[in-house]
Amino acid sequence: MGRFVRVGWIWTLALAALLAAGRADAFNIVFDGPSGYGISAAAATSAAAAGVPIFDVDSLAVAANLGIVIPAPSVQSFQLVTTPSVANPNTANSLWTVDNTGTGSLDSAWLVFTNPETYTASLVGFEIDPNAGWALLDVFAGQDYFYPAVFLGDVPAGAAATFAMHHRVGQALDSNSQGQFVLPKYHVAALEGVPLPEPAAFALVVAALVLAGIPLRRNA
Image 1 (cartoon, helix red, strand yellow):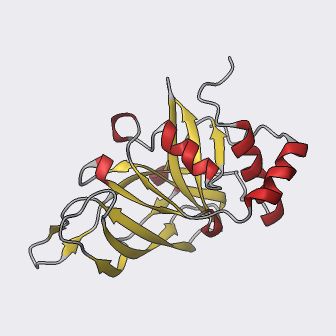
Image 2: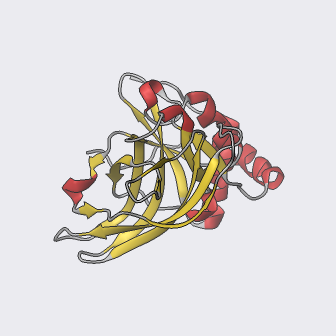
Image 3: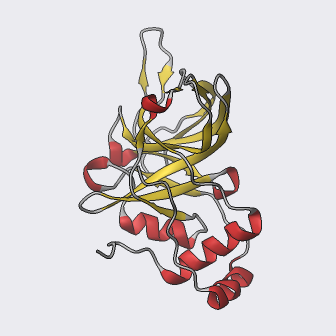
């Protein structure tokens, strides 16, 4: 599996954009990509303009093959609306734990969200905040797929990483047999060997992406 980042750098212009752009902000996504996988190219372009970095990677790993096990997230809070939509969604916060049950360390690892398992994909999303380690991964498989991913870092065998998820669901929430609301479930993948840039370098990556634009096709 290819494990590297390809980012186009335009150093002089990137520095100028960095001075003008300031701090990256959180960006709200829904799974409006091809067949409900990832987010659309138009949304990815908007995310890059908002300061979300996009890393160009060759392929993703099956999370379970890396020893990744994810217990049911711990729901922290809900905020429901009368008539939910993408513009005015039900929101919720949950805390995720990612266990490394394998025999080796996960190095510079990312958890990648490919598509929702429940609810309507184009109505399901969450907040991605580059300041909290979120990014988009551009994976080419006949066309570009842009997947939201959160940086887990180095996770030794037997250890765990945690992160917060800020859900946005533009439809009525399901409930279980106990009458409890049920949040979306997601299919996930994983990636290793792509370190999160240091803050200064991270800001330059953002500026370069905004200036250079997002390549929607790879060169042969």
